[in-house]
Length: 391
Ligand SMILES: Cc1ncc(COP(=O)(O)O)c(C=O)c1O
Image 1: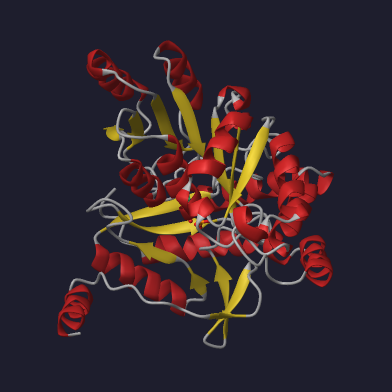
Image 2 (image 1 turned 135 degrees about the vertical axis):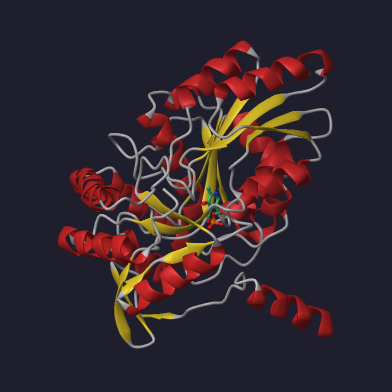
């Protein structure tokens, strides 16, 4: 106990201690925190689907018809028709032969990399990939070669160095949209490299699915190479508004994971309401309403970043609804987040190890359901609050 207490005290002293905040009621463009209504600028509920009536109805109906629990892992007792229905629908959405549900994005990246790759293989991983990919690489026991962020030249030079030692499979793995920076991976260049070096390409499209591309099929569609991606991982808890994750790929990959992926095999499957709700989310994403929401999201983002940039904020390389305001050190970052909270804006300060040292930031996330005038006002408050001396 004493050691843990001391560690927590150290974190407090360094301004690095994390703690939970409880929001009351539903997730939406505003949330209630400690009895105050705040503008929500730290939600991954990009299209507002977490409280959409069509999804709530699907969840309710499936719960009434199928109950609340799945009763076991898919291989023991918990493979229900709604799981299979969703997988077929998702495979068609991503234009692949098959798909497999996972219980979360974290579990998916762990289970996919561990289940498909081993000590003879090489995983080429972007240096800013999500923690769940980093942990999946470790679990796989494959050799992991980290290339410079979104830099195909760095990747190619590492591939050239690795070539003479090659024994097994090669896979390039990257976030589609980087979760802390909001930039998009150079997918077309990665597709070209994977072709030239006989590698596979795995995309974690947690922040692209539903949101990017003309029809919401994600960063692959946005970059014009949806059909060249071998392993499409994504989550259901962000743009799709619910919870869980998937891999869409070839039948042989999915069958392999059913036989090898520990996070899939040794865990109770998602409650039946989840795949039903995710199917309802795809209904919205594929409808005219989905196209309208994506358009609104893009224009909301534009309103927000124009004010930030005009006010001298550094938003890094953001190209999407994830808009960091780089602040640098943990102390000023957490002070800015605290002041903005007092001013009615809920935005999180992000510190190491989530981002590299010196790269602390306020991570703003835009929703289609935000009111643009409120976003403008929020951007003005951010400009007035953060220290822009770093720019
Ligand atoms: C890029 C990326 N991959 C995976 C995950 C994990 O997904 P989940 O929240 O469903 O565990 C996240 C964030 O949560 C993420 O940002």
